Amino acid sequence: MELKTLIRDVPDFPKKGIIFKDICPLLQNHTAFSQAVDQFARRFEGSGVDVIVGIESRGFIFGAALAYKMGAAFVPVRKVGKLPSEVIQESYALEYGNGTVEMHRDAIVSGQRVLLVDDLLATGGTMSAAVNLVKRLGGHVVGAAFLVELTFLDGRKALPGQDVVSLIQY
Ligand code: AMP
Image 1 (cartoon, helix red, strand yellow):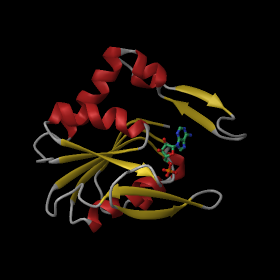
Image 2 (cartoon, rainbow, N blue to C red):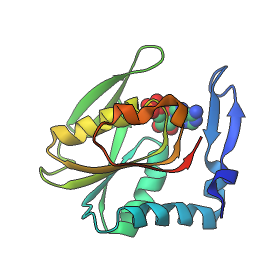
Image 3 (cartoon, rainbow, N blue to C red):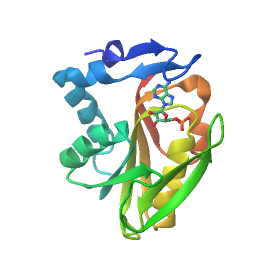
Image 4 (cartoon, protein in one colour):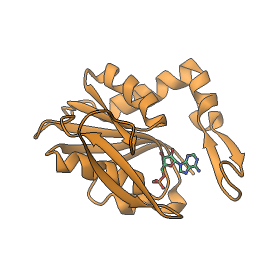
């Protein structure tokens, strides 16, 4: 199945000039959804992944399914103020201002092997901040996996030395 045909372009969402890549049609197709999760799992099979880190919020959808499939733990990276216990924070540049993401301080044990997952790689700022959170807790980053990559934004540059995987490219 061609996964790309199930990504819907929504122009001017959430603001003018942005073409939002809507993954809902893919999620609505159970064959496509399981195919995407299986492709991630196959790509990182044998990498000894202990923990899948999913980035709020669409990274949770693929991350949780992948954690189940790979027999790994699941850890959420959330936007500021959402996690209830003690957190560590990383800020990153957005088009206007800054974004901040958080992870529970006890979410990762030093030495654990971590695969990070999000739905889409744009500039790489979000994933780069999440990678820093994992590293600060002593985690070993195995890779960064995305359903969609906007290659024209060169987000891989923000993730030097990382094994960056995407299933669909634009
Ligand atoms: P970035 O930090 O620039 O790589 O942005 C990645 C984050 O923003 C991901 O969590 C995406 O879900 C979201 N995002 C950025 N651009 C788009 C887009 N064109 N369509 C859908 N989601 C996007």
